[in-house]
Image (cartoon, rainbow, N blue to C red):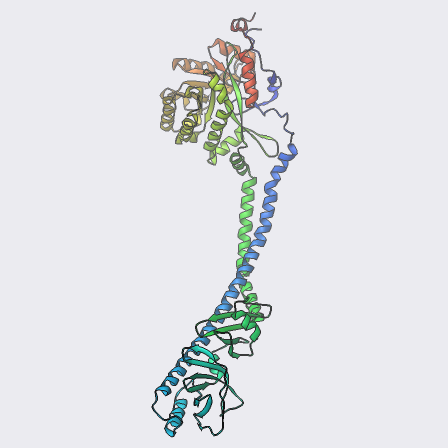
Length: 567
């Protein structure tokens, strides 16, 4: 058998498999595909469970937000109305105090004998002419002497308990008028004179429904109320207690003279809340619809191949396998092509020709390239440093050829690794050369930095023969479709001869892809094709397997002359 090149033991079953993108056995070895298979299959349903949970949340969250928001809004609006009532009561109270204080100052400054006819006439005139004062009087030694209605003929003691509301002005919330003994009045006293005010004047403001008002002094003494307030509850709220209970909603206001507590029944609050929530119902339904649409869109995107690829890339689930590149005249391994592999969460392998074009269409090709760069240096950095003649070939996408990000990333990543640029070959397919000017610039930059540049799948395009000479190339890779025709009567079998002649004329190194038979290897060797890859030598394999393959080939003790002699 002429020129037999030893095969790697793991390749004996490769021939029944389909070809994969850029060479290598496809699908990869399924041994261990079911190891942990239940786990990886279950992984596919994780997003479904998450989507179901999100769907429930999409239904409940708008309800909870709407219900909570409407409750807070209702409380806020009701408290706002109660605060307005409290502010009106405070305004009214201060107006009364101002008028009472002005009246008392007037009589303190009046130079008339107390309780004289002129004095009493003035008190009567002021009572009639003052809107908020109902009675004016004069007292001496704690005893009433005269008032608006005349002199007092009997001894009347003034109440002893006073509450100071402002300097030199004292207030008594339960004073008695001689004109109306059965009616309690609010008395304001200062330096011998007093004024009586009907209590209702303090709370004479518009109220809706069963709104209650309780007015306290700053010291906390009850002054006046309206609609029979719960004084005990109002006092607690005035002291800083919780502003609502099962029965009423409270609002408290305090200033230098008064503490005012206004309340409304919770039944009114609940009625308003029901109205708010009915008004929110269309908005809630719209929020549900939008949330469900978003979940459905997300689920479809997540469960689609694009979404799953994006997730796999984000999680670093894409693997890198290495297909050996063999020196045809010695059988020694000189490098490998790095090929990206993706095991789907269901446990099956996704063919590169299925997901690579998908990645290119959705702008993920550059990210995949950068992932491969980092993985290759992590996997093969030590081997590349140990053997300066060893190389790893990386595939560049059309996007990589256009934007140059991958080249910059590679240069930055190589710094300080001890790996030479010439050990990293960069391969681009003919599709990457559609923009010839951009391709030429990218390839020139790569060569300037020391990388070996190759054109992959050569001959499969329509225009490559016309502009190959214009591109700064080092290596031409002969596509598997032409290698397959070696030794056949197909018309395309002669194309490979023209490709080889063109490569020779351009002084390009040649690598034949997809070598499956010894006959093909012998033919290529006779036609001075230096390197080859394919099932005949080894399939694409994980990093550790490739390292073992490399060491086996390095120390196998091959005799090139014997291997080539056929004898």
